[in-house]
Amino acid sequence: MRPGPRNLITDVEGLLVGNASDDRLKSGVTVVTAAEPFTAAVDVRGGAPGTRETDLLEPGKLVSQVDALVLSGGSSFGLDAASGVSDGLRAQGRGFPAGPARVPIVPAAILFDLANGGAKDWDENPYRGLGRTALSAAGVDFALGTEGAGTGANTATLKGGLGSASLVLDNGATVGAVVAVNAIGMATVPGGRNFLAGMLELDGEFGGLGAGTGPLEPFSPDYIKRGPAKPLENTTIAVVATDLALDKAAAKRMAAIAHDGMARALYPAHTRFDGDLVFTASTGKREMESDRDALGMMVEQAAANCLARAIARAVFSARPRPGDNLPCWSGLPGAV
Image 1 (cartoon, rainbow, N blue to C red):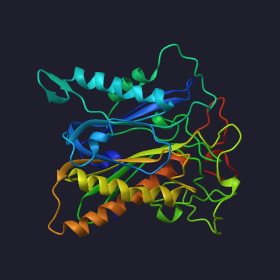
Image 2: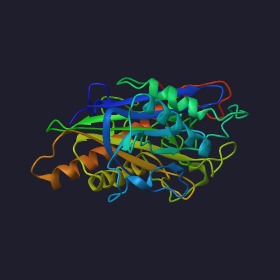
Image 3: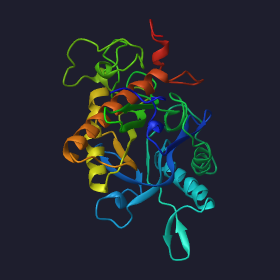
Image 4: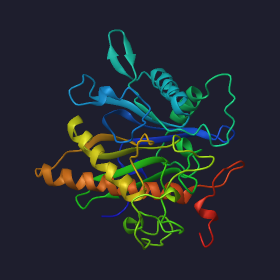
């Protein structure tokens, strides 16, 4: 197994990602879309989620495919980013046929970045415009770190951000992840630069330091947000994807297993104060092989590992901006 050529979720054939950021606002939006509708599912593990149109992703619901998935800052205000994406898709003639109309299907999830020092004194919700801008920017290449939905994100000790990673399986199938990391917990070992996901790193993608040493205590106040970033101001939201054809039930299973990647890269994860959520996107460009159970298990574990690596890459790639209330990994002594 190896990373795809970009080491981004867009190594999954058919997927496009667009970012829109506002440095004054210290927030932004990330959109995952494709030229054609794709199968999607969702799994929520955190105790404080914020979502739009996620119920329709459950197996057995009428709509089987979506036009885009949205990750946004802004807490509940950020859910309006999906409206901007929907506007842009409607202008393209996209959407679920409903009588004489077409209705774009755009599930969304948000993270809380309203207390990060950015200007939040808007008269009109800015996220609808950011959503449409992010859709317009969608392509196969996109920036990581202080970008898109990760623009204003923080972890317990360092700036968070937007991360992505991919993996090409031995049979040629591709798995990828994109994540906005705004966790209550930490992504590095206490007091060090090593990433908790270090044992999963490929090709030095987040510093090449390897796994840290020493046990983690069951709980310590040093592991969670304090001061300007408080325990109610968190959430890690992600999309994992594959080019394999999955139905909604299999896609939901993939989202559920992918959450293991959060637990491998963040400590603590899935707390009552996080809204941790994972979407799955399946483009269906490649058919499942005969041994569906074995391949399905392989894809699920690959998704978890991609998500863990993407989380570390998000923190590794964050860059300083005026008014930050936490340092970047790149500013730590000895960091590259």
